[in-house]
Image 1 (cartoon, rainbow, N blue to C red):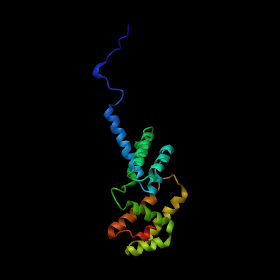
Image 2 (cartoon, rainbow, N blue to C red):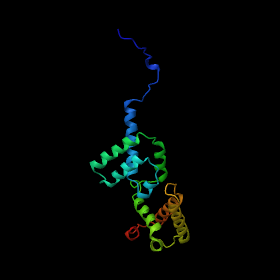
Image 3 (cartoon, rainbow, N blue to C red):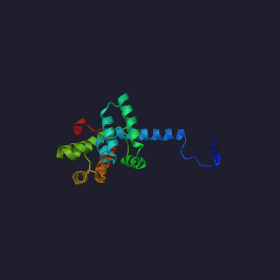
Image 4 (cartoon, rainbow, N blue to C red):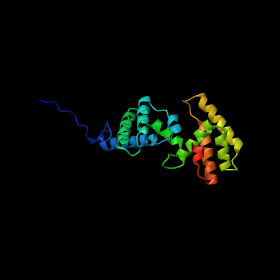
Length: 185
C-alpha cells in the first residue's frame, strides 16, 4: 500500500513562483537583452557582462535588426542570461542613459564622441564651427580626460567619456542643430 503524504493545505508558501511569474521574468530578461543589443558600440563595451553572454550578444548585433535569426539569437542570449543575476546588468543599462529608440540622435552622438576621441583637431574645429558659442576649452579638456581614460583601463567605468557625451548632447540640443555627416565619418 502506498504511503500517504501529509498535505499542509494552502497556508504554506509555494516553493516556486507560478508559471505566469516565470514567463514575466523571462520576458523581462528578453527585453533587457534586446535593449543591450541595440546599444551603441561604446555603451556596449562599457557593460560588464559574463563572457558567454557577451559572445552571443556580439553574434546577435551583427545580424539584421528585424530578422528571425536575430530574434532567435536574442532568445538564446536571454536563456544564457537567466543563469546569472540580471539586476546588476539592468542597473548598468539604466545608468547609461537613453537608448537609440528613445533618442534618435544617441547613435550619432556616440559616433561623434568616438570621432572626437580618435579624430583630433579637425573634428573639434568642425564641431566648433557648427556651434560657434561652444566653450572650446571645456570641450578640449573633456576630450583630453576621456582619451586618458581610454588608455588607462578598458574595464573601468568611464565618467569622463559620459561627461563628454552629455556635453555634446546638451550643446546640440541648446543650439537646435542636426549633426552633419562630415563629423560622423
